[in-house]
Image (cartoon, rainbow, N blue to C red):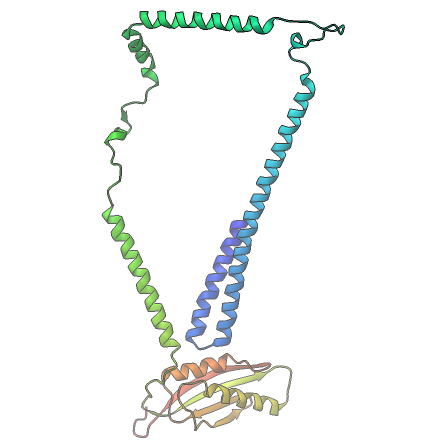
Length: 305
């Protein structure tokens, strides 16, 4: 279940990041912000999931350690209760309560000295009588326990034959460098693409007289025609000012119902048209939704299509 949650969270975060980039390139800022917030929430949830998993693992380890400690402590208590008097002969009082005197310690010290002398004599005799052939016979007996000299893939090199520091692998270095260069190039290309898509400088104007944009506006919760017209005009006035060009002449007219057509003179560049369409689609007005039906460049006189 944990890995399934990780997989689901990773896929959701990837989708949110991809859609965030797509909305940024389309100048749909409201949707890009929503994707960014969703990505941030998913990242926080994944981090919390990892932390909770680690904390749960630590709690289980502490609980197991406490249980083992309690078990050992209980066994020690039981053994202590069953211990009793191990060396009764060291008890100075007998069963009748009379005091008894022992000579065990001096006897033990004398016996230890005698045994140490006997061990020294045995060691000297064995060292004087041993022969080198005994060690060779012992080595012959232990040969069966030694590892084979030749492994399944040939002779195994000894530890002394191996280099202390392995030689650098040129192929791995070249592959790693190529991967790093490709990642840097891809990142630079992505940044350049985003910078071109979200540029604010005026673009090159096309050879056209005007730009026409047709869009449809829906206002939820009301059937008032004046409210829909007000929402359409407010949306148009706000979005036409979002372009980099100065749109002084930008009349708006109703075609039919909730369909409106806006004309901007002089014509906008392709990037400004994309910004205008993204702003209309990404409507932030209250209960208002817009949908771009079409956009075109009106050619100059003498350059008709």
